[in-house]
Image (cartoon, rainbow, N blue to C red):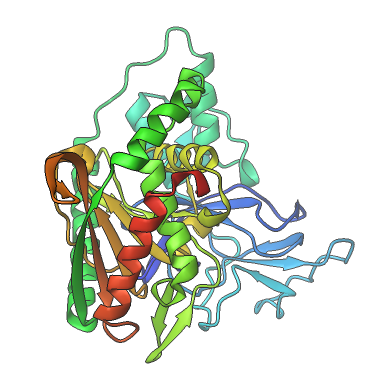
Length: 395
């Protein structure tokens, strides 16, 4: 069970997308896991062949527990045994000792159809309830005939007319409450353990917004850029110059992130907040960064994030400008050491060379870990963000 955030200590396996004997490659989606915040697609970290699925759908296990074993492609399958032999690789690899495995014969919850027991994953049962699908009329294509979410969605697609959705208010309320509790625990830990310091800087956005206007005139409407792309890119390039803001505080020491994976704070329609990673943001063009951000936000709100997007943000950015907020002082996501916030771009009185005028201004804030940096470094970091914004042609 991968760690999909500092606030996660266990997760529920909802669904397998593979079965024993399937060949898999690094990065393939093999399972769906329910955390207290979202349903996350789990990627595999090794090439090979699935030997055994150890954890059955519907089982909640701690972070670090082995979910499945993976063998080398072409090798004979591992012999069945009461205690599984040491695997060639685990999904995912984790330093924590595995929890006692569930019996290999364990199955998802079942329903009775014509006197026979049909297995249904918890996720499929929930989706069927929401969409008004009769499980007795669905053919399962999952492991050993289990009904999966894909089977439910297929049944809806071929139905004529489609069944009306059935509200699931109690379940939504329960998930919202669980998410709020998870956020509260993580933020309380952050404020308790991390010695925060806060800085803010007002940045004249005249130059970047004028450049953006001219750039968008040369682009088709569907390819035009938003100011948020400039803000994210400026942060991504700034941490390349200030690596002490990009990384983790673990075991009383700072560990540089190496690569720049921006955590993009995203509000969910059902309530709550999640901050998945935009990988290698410093290597993206503005167009790539904007498209990547839109895709990330859409998948976050649809519950289709990948495990790597939840486990490896190196610094988080929160932008509440579209909500009309002028100033945001964020709380650091442990074990990260910094969070950058942006408010709305406002027209404000602004003096230039002794002359007072009106300029578009954004307030950038930094919440940083005093164990990894200090106010002097934080001030330099905000100044670099300002410089990057005022040279948008270099982003």
